[in-house]
Length: 315
Image: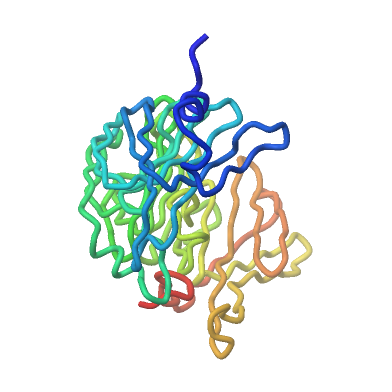
């Protein structure tokens, strides 16, 4: 029986080579923190785990973690290393794996942001990545590149202020933050680079999220079904008026919330629309579901808010 990566690592090292060893409840190793040079044979070649720190962007050694089947889960590298994937070859500082050993995410940079090291400092170190996508090549500075287990592109997350033009089911669109794909390569969601009017089953809605969740390309304000229909739209600048058969009206608007970093300021929280074949669910201050053929809708456009780059971060 072939030894797992974890078994190989633990058999070739001594406990004093780690500052921490943390186990699962059943005693299997969850993660270790190396304090000496450690080269590991992985599905993408030999990788050297981080074991030193510096005073700017890498102030602590990140744990080397394992899945419960003994396969490597996440590794922060001692030095930037070239890794080849199905969507390109990239110089990376960290990467994660699925339990079967296939690449999950590639991180070209993995410095820790702090009061001493801003996202602009980190981004200045980034190189432009050439990522193979089903429609061609995306060229941008990427925070992360996520793959499916079969190697197909799953999502891209771009650095703030980076944009790229990509094809969508409703035409070419400039994106910021990132995009996500279905396993077959069709577009799942995208974050428009600027407020963009979208034709939906209820009228024109301006798609945009000034404060994307987690600054990640995995979740975006404009989503599509596998066959290219509009599935979700988040809008900070569209008001939806619903008229029921009785003539009564319900109004759904983006709401204002206290800024978590500055209580004297407010942020706009978008209205979120979720479509299916027969209904629309509106998520705002309250959530309500309407059958499309039983009510009528009217949309009104409001001033669009300024986008937020990194929450609570130095601009």
